[in-house]
Image 1 (cartoon, one colour):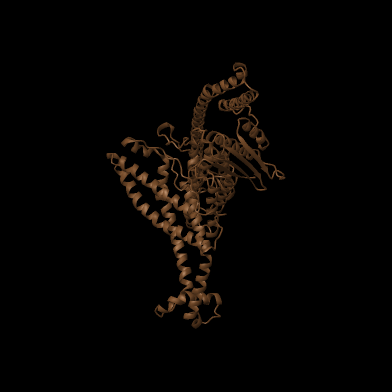
Image 2 (cartoon, helix red, strand yellow; image 1 turned 90 degrees about the vertical axis):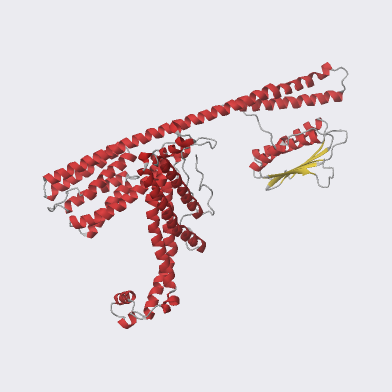
Length: 640
């Protein structure tokens, strides 16, 4: 089924993630989002990890076949909670489409085939908990420093007398010995130092909390956000997403957010491992090693969107490393292990996201650059160097081809899902067309036929009934004219209903200028109607949609008055103002010898829909002061 959690409109509109930094309410909101998130993730981690481990370990005895689906459902609930917290903060995280698991034990076990639920489990256990533990530690430490420093003079007198070394050493170092130790290690100097430190921390607190909250939200969107393709493959009319071959498959779009998460973790791991490795094993200066490690990490991050820059970094960095580490060492050279792994991942990422020509460049250019560096280094192509080159090129080639194959598989699955969606849309359109044809058939066979009979009888009345007076002939002529107009409109409606490609000719729609004709035609039926149009000299033209709606309001109100109160006097007033148009149709009570015709009330409901769609309003009810309740008034207001 399609999960709609956290799709509600955020509780407040925001012009940007960094707007209102120093608004106390927004600072409290950031703190309220960051700090409790750790405890929610701790609870989720404490439940999901043991349950998932127990489910996997007992899968062989079939107990895990029941425990793992329950664990996945629980993980989805925690994922929904994360989306709800993001919506409370003010960011919408679209929920993905989940597979319907179906009834019975077999349907319950089918939950394990839903890849989206496994992603929810992975996010809540492997991503959210460690990240929110870090953001909580930073947030609570910063908040404690800000509050503790700014309130130091309040709580410091209750501390035991001792010498605070940190402020004293810092003051001596900053003053270069100008401040004496007695002053530097005094309680007053300690208080001033901590107060300034707390004030700076308090000043930066909104920025730090907003950064932590924004980072958490970005991570939640990447890991839990529903991809576009999943929404497109969800069936129409809020029907459950089917299981089996018609369920939405995971494509690369499903992993688009996760690719950033995984590459981010890989980049951090690369810096954490490669930096000390280059320093300790290859005797590279720490600053240079840091730059090389950061360049490796940046190459992986750029590979998703900018392959040219990624390949450039992936070519320059190993070549420089080979040159500066050319001294004889008992370690892999010219490809350190970390750079070999990064090179292989770089080829895989580019193969997964880009054309095969980019993959060829990512495979060839770094290898050629390193070979050139080995030739220029003077160390020569030793057996170890050749082995390192062969291993790196082989691993990178294998992962690069794997990326190309994975991209092809994802593309084929995406094309299959698009084809299924297209077929579903065609089926829905065919069903709609069949229903419209059925309605058109009924209208043609029943209503149009009856109107044709009325028209024929009215036209032939003077020939069939001898001795008709002029007044009766005029009445029958008016009936014939009204029936012909109704038939003409009916034919246009039937053509529109049967139209399958939107090419049916459309009849001109009535406007305000047609109101006098409508009033005159209604008077010909014997009704007593007074009509006044006020404010017609305004310079702004009336929109065609507004004019048509005014016409339909008057038309329906006149029909209701003549149907429910035959013989009563009707007053029609249309006022054209500068900003709005008002319509008033008022009829009095019907004579006692003219019984009203029954009605369904659908006409007034249709009027309200028309007027409300244009931003107007309609009121309808008995006229004020009419105890009998037979008089009726319709008042409509539409924006000009």
